[in-house]
Amino acid sequence: MRIKHTALVLLIGFASVEAAAQSAPPRKGIPAIAKAANGAIVTIITAANDKPIAQGTGFLVSADGVIETNYHVIENGNVAIVKFPDDTAFPVDGVLAADKVRDLAIIKIHGKTFRTLALGDSDDIQIGEEVVAIGNPLLLESTVSNGIISGVRTSKEQGGKFLQTTAPISPGSSGGPLFNMRGEVVGINTLYLKVGENLNFAIPVNDAKLLLSHQSAKLQNLPNEHEVAPTDEPPSTTDEEPIAQKKQTEETYYVRARKGETYIIEYRGHQLTAHCREALGWDRDKGKLGRPMTQNECMYLLDTVGKHFSEDFIVRGDNELRYRPLGHFETSAPVADVLDITDDVLLGAPKHSHPAPKTSPEILKTLRWIQNTLKDDEGKTQYLGADRKSVDHINLITDLDGCQVTFVHETSEAEKDNREEETFHSRTQVNLGELDPTSLTSDVSSPDILGLPVSTVRVHTTDKTASVSLAINDRGWEPPLVIPTTDLLWELPSPYAERFVKALKHAITLCGGKSSSF
Image 1 (cartoon, rainbow, N blue to C red):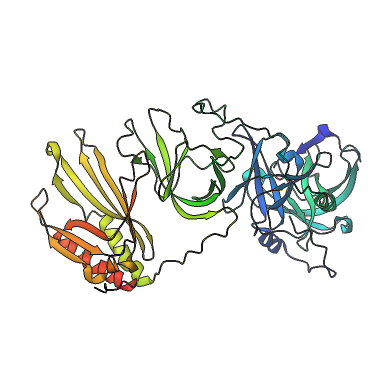
Image 2: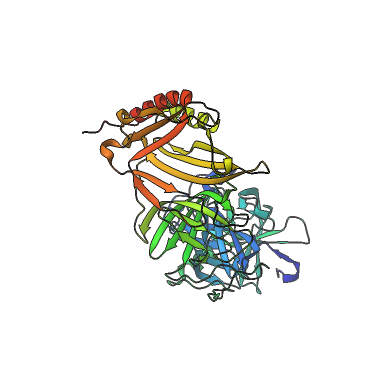
């Protein structure tokens, strides 16, 4: 049979290469096949000059990030991203092998512990045999369909055989696996005939295995990849030019991967793990504090995986990164994503093993009470500031991970139009187990604007060790200076301060806080 190009719809839309076992695996049901394949089938998105142009499917054939797909999936873009069902994303590092005639490509992403699929033997396939297709049509990830092998066809123009199947596939399924009922990949879903009813085709997996055996030891560029020259000019506002530089240098930040709101970013021989804290915006004056627009998520960094940024766009502070999508250039509405650095290792070195902070139901119950009462403004005080403006002092717990706690103190002034402008913001990070519970004190201080009593609550670390991290004015345009310190202080309404001290002392004790030795 000759499969004419004019009658085809390409479906832009894994597998261990170990030898088949001597005894055939047992037959599996469709749910078991789909469950076993979860996490090994990926979406491949290609782009040209930062504009997505095509989407297809691929599947992992080895744990170190080797992926099988169709050539036409990667043919036209100059960059490509691999996205997993759990929203983890990796850039395509390059191409290991490609066969344009057979419409096969083997690409590579960075990693060592990926889940893979088992490859079967397509020469053993029988007409009438049941098969299962899994792909990501129209970004509908992990779509499962089933059918039978209805024929084996040959196309001289396309260099070999095709498995004809009744398992429905759609645009976006290209490069996805076709399984036998033992859960082995026997084909790579490739195209369907637009004319006719349910005429779908897959490339036999043995062709892909042959290509795998001839893969290059050196990564090649994507078929349409070209270098983007570095530039110091402001980014285009027409979206016609990419902000990022394609090729990495020692002086650029490279966004290696993303999982949810956590990013892997490489810079100057280091691999940084950073988690989104918030997005900030400035109406006009970058000399004032930024306005929070999100909490625990980024707004602008989402589509940057696989891109490189100069220090004009990503700025590193003591324990944080700031991504400024418009760079350092003057703008009427500057914005930035702020990320906390949670790990910093040399490239190629294993990640640091961070023991989980101590926790228990009682610890969480106690700290949740403090967090919720502060959120309800029970710890809020008011004073008369300059120009006789009312100034609110607000205390919060923004992050809570067992005994690892982030306290926030902010002040805001009432404006003439009844808006409030934040004038000060600081973050204090501490492990409560490092505090001395016997140092906790509460002393009545100056009354607030209404004449109500206010108490100053203080506590310090065991033996005055400088293990508390204080970031002052952390919502400024530039990253803040982080100061190691020994003491924490709150000014709270006196009636609430008594309950706060009791709860905090209980939490410190539960977290293992010890008395100082002097």
